[in-house]
Structure formats: C-alpha cells, structure tokens
Image (cartoon, rainbow, N blue to C red; front, side, top):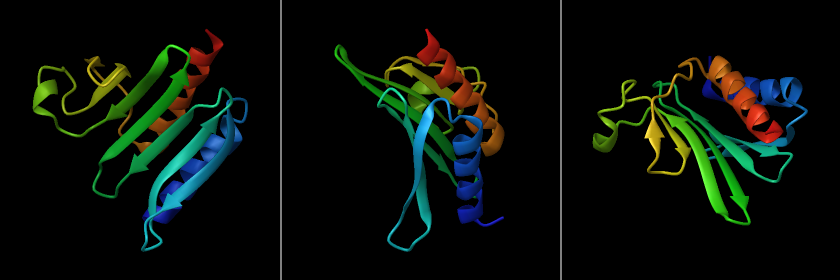
Length: 127
C-alpha cells in the first residue's frame, strides 16, 4: 500500500471514529508531495502528530500547552542509547516530558496504534 494511502486511512480513522475529540485533520506534505505527517487538532486546542514510514518507523506525539507549561506524550520506536533499559526498547513512551520515559505497549500496526493512542487522549481529556 502506498504511504499516501496509509496516511489517508489514518486520517479517516481519526475523523470518523474520534470525532468527539478530533476537530480537524491535515496531512502535511514534503516538497515532493509525499506525506510527512498527519496532524490531528484536538478539542482542547492541543495537537497530535502521527508519523509512519514504510520501513516501520513511527511516532505518535501529543503536544499540550497549558498555563503551567507544556506537556508531551509520545510513543515511538527510534532507538536511543538513553532508553536501552526500557523493557520494550526500542519502543518507548515519553510520559509528560522528553525525559520521563517508560515502556510502550502501543501496537506496531499504525491503524491499531492510532486507535489506542486516540483512546488514551480521550481518557486523559476526560480526567
């Protein structure tokens, strides 16, 4: 499946299955026209960026800006020497900040992972 079709399918999942928390979506493109990432605009004014590659690399990043500062939540599989001790390495989860890293149990399948992450966003917003 071409990468553009993968991104379009992910956008459809976010738009249709998570319309209670996702207000808009955009696939940002590289100068070549190929997709670079999917940006999801969340009801609280924050955003989620989704990056996937045909080589199996991925990142799902939720950035929130609040009065007390900025928090981020990101699952990715980029290998980092600093996170070798994480049990799911190279998969890991930045829980609230770049330095607070724990195991990531997000699926490696982009469609399942997007659903899992959007459910996490939904539950976090409901708190």
